[in-house]
Image (cartoon, rainbow, N blue to C red; front, side, top):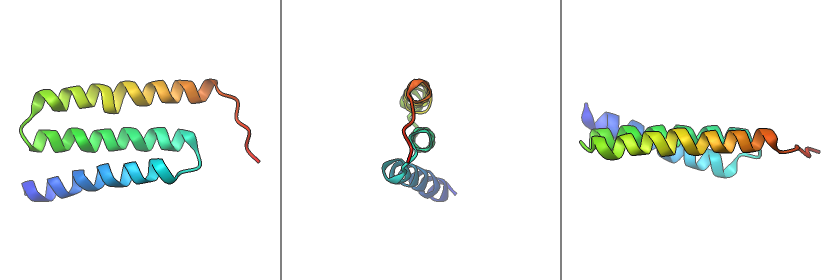
Length: 80
């Protein structure tokens, strides 16, 4: 069961990171980065590192995507 959870969280990290890189929409990239941070948080919990998981949840899945979303919302969009 632990192996399955590790594979799923690894796929979340990989999928979220790749989608954030290849997406044309900046808001979608920021949300994909948050999903990737949640996957990393789950992976750290599986590895029995709760202190690192809490830090990753706060920074990787909370503060950084929030800053990106606020910055993107204040930026003027020039879509063609």
